[in-house]
Amino acid sequence: MTGAAEPLREASVDVIQRELTAFARRARAAAARVHPELPLVSYTLLAHIEEQRGCRATDLAAHYLLDKSTVSRQVAGLEKLGFVERRPAPDDHRVQVLHPTEAGTRVLAAAQASRMAAFRERLEDWPAEDLARFAAYLLRYNAAAASPLPGAPAN
Amino acid sequence: MTGAAEPLREASVDVIQRELTAFARRARAAAARVHPELPLVSYTLLAHIEEQRGCRATDLAAHYLLDKSTVSRQVAGLEKLGFVERRPAPDDHRVQVLHPTEAGTRVLAAAQASRMAAFRERLEDWPAEDLARFAAYLLRYNAAAASPLPGAPAN
DNA sequence: ACTTTCGGTTGTATAGTACAACGGTTCTTT
DNA sequence: AAAGAACCGTTGTACTATACAACCGAAAGT
Image 1 (cartoon, chains in turn orange, green, purple, yellow):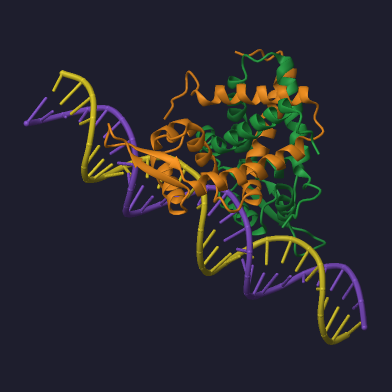
Image 2 (cartoon, rainbow over the protein chains, first blue to last red; image 1 turned 60 degrees about the vertical axis):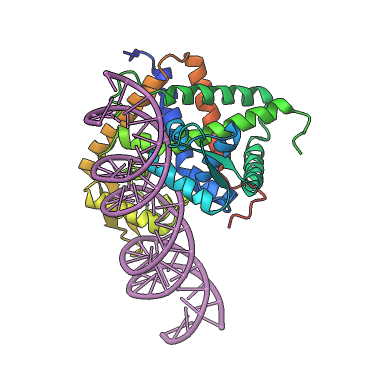
């Protein structure tokens, strides 16, 4: 067990828990404010698609821990908006490779820019060193969260 | 302007942006896994109610940047579950002060415990120093995010 | 060939949220 | 004091995000 004799750790974990939760609560509303054009979470998916220069729906589901159906609908939405394009894979007829369209790339760039601007403004007066450490912590935390806990039921 | 001649800052901000977003995406699902009993965001509201030892719905809305109607329904849900109680304010007949019930306090404690456990497990092998710094960064970030940006339209 | 497994879609259900309209209350202003 | 404004909360409606389960077609394993 993690020692009960470490109140400092406990307190830190508690704060982290609380603050990450607070952030999560606000995130959606904030995102909607920052880029109302790109409806939603699709922004993230589109970003991933673009970054990977083409990927399958299953990859998205796996990477973001989303259900297939959710991804399917999100992608359908993006397609209807004309931001992604599906191309059947030549070798495997089951998969369809997703690519951003010209419009998709454009809108994504715009959304990323305003998003970045919002973050930059909030982090404006942070020393570079703290920024770097904060980034590293988040990466580390999320990496741990991504892999299901060892003993978890993983349902 | 934040200097364009600081690629390190940019990179850090980018990572922070991405990772916080990733966290936000997963948070809800994770919360549902950790405490399915307490339907979700309600957990946060209930926690706030308890912490404040009684508060009004409007306070919740203001604090969490939620619409009145959303809070109204959340509270209604919590009440139906028997976790909060409304008491009319003696002085002002418009407001109703929210208090956790016995059951509410109990379930909240349980949820907090399992939530904490999950976080603790994920943060298990972090040095205490890093935990403390991570917590501080999150506090700082959220404090900045809570106050609407100076130039923001705030629509 | 038969059966799994895999990638994706669709049906259905639920949580969370917003906006707009409304009903009472209380406070302001004339 | 009467009229109007501001405030607190609820309800109607709509939409996004999400999951689970059932399904279809294609591919891989036996």
